Length: 131
Image (cartoon, rainbow, N blue to C red; front, side, top):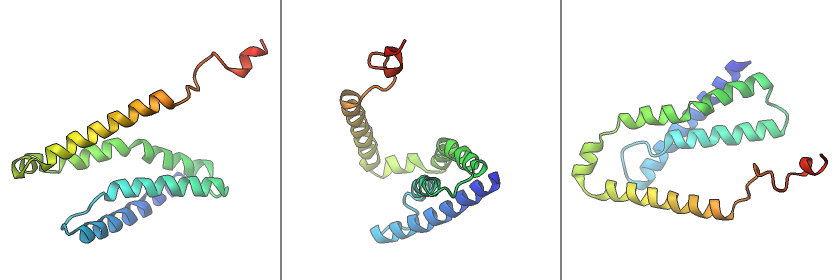
C-alpha cells in the first residue's frame, strides 16, 4: 500500500509540471515556473482531502509522508541545476528578488512569533491542573 503514496506523488508531480509549464507560458517565459512547489501543494491538499474522507489507508499515508519529508532535498537538487552565476551576471533582479524574499520571510516569522500561541508551554496546560 505504500506504493500508492508514491503513485499519488507521481500524479501530483506530473500535474505540477504541467501547471508549471502553463504558468511559464502565461507569463511569457520558456521554462517551468514552480512545478515542484505546485506538485507538493497538490500532494498536501490531496492527502488532507483523502484523509478527511477516510480514503487514505495508513500505509498509503506513510508513503505520502516519506515523500513529504523528501521535499527539501528534491528542491535543493533541482536548484543545483540552475545557473545562478548567469542569473547574477544578467542583472540585479535575481539578487533583489532573493533579498526581498528573505526579508518578507523574516517579517512573517517575526509577526507569527509575536502573535502566535505557544502550545508547548506548561503554564496553561489543562492536564497539569488535575495533578
